[in-house]
Image (cartoon, rainbow, N blue to C red; front, side, top):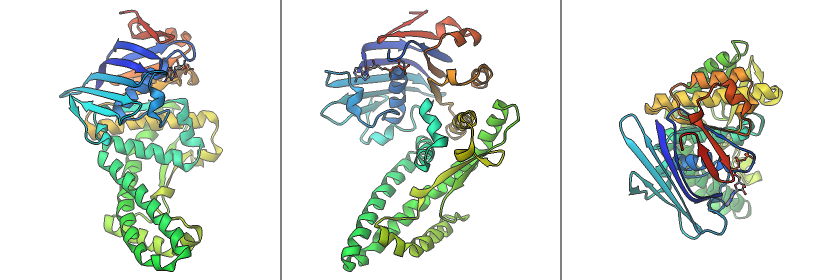
Length: 370
Ligand SMILES: Nc1ncnc2c1ncn2[C@@H]1O[C@H](COP(=O)(O)OP(=O)(O)OP(=O)(O)O)[C@@H](O)[C@H]1O
């Protein structure tokens, strides 16, 4: 799929902006703090309904304004797609897809497919497991909105169970209601585990292949799903093994007042040439592995939905050497790419057409074709 245009009103530092995009590459060039990432952020919002930089919608509305508006129009293989969001300081955000107002914001998923790669994504490898769980969850949610629903429910049930564990410490009578929460936790948790296992099984060969190309076959990347539950072939058997673990950990859960086993403790192991690069990788290895995973996601989304997602590369091109940049542009022939950069030098090396380039200065965007 690709986006044809974007309209912003009172979004971040923009008053009123309309941009027509190129179906292949769109590069936003400018100094720091001019509004380049804001454009990528607005595109991401039309995919996920939320920002990749903040959880507070009010930060997205232009200072001194009450409302912001974002709209994209694009093409999928068989349909046109129009997504519009209205953000309001005081009211809930309103989202329309092809003119129809959504009743639940989560319904926005599965319309505009986006993969974003930013310096933040380095965290994917070097930070704690929660960043890697977020990666897995975001990717599966985009392809399967039901997964997002189960994840939200799981987190709610987990919180209720943890509250109950704390209460039981003071009043044993609450013990009688624990099994109710356990059953819900087991059912929802097993759904997450089975989906995550499937996701990692599919992304592993894809990312390995890409990684081999980027590193000219010098490195072998392997990602492994790491969970404290024994994953079995069937849903029922996996749920049983989760049940055993939950029973075994009851004493310690009660002591701690929190649930110590389940998919909320999952991680993604990332190995290069059999070395765990979460702890032992160089910066370059961590960066390249994160890139390989992100690029694998593109293929995965294509396989799952039949559409290539849009790729947002925020400030990462200059961190890659020229060979890797060229690889990226060449390998992603069929993907619409949005790039932000402060450096123009490499644009010449990449031999990009001027019409692909947008110059951004203090929320004013100029393009050769405008
Ligand atoms: N709600 C808002 N209202 C008005 N301006 C805002 C708002 N939020 C952010 N800005 C402004 O947007 C600018 C930052 O834009 P953006 O993050 O897109 O920068 P950038 O061009 O990508 O820079 P860099 O290269 O440093 O990443 C800053 O000038 C900031 O003050």
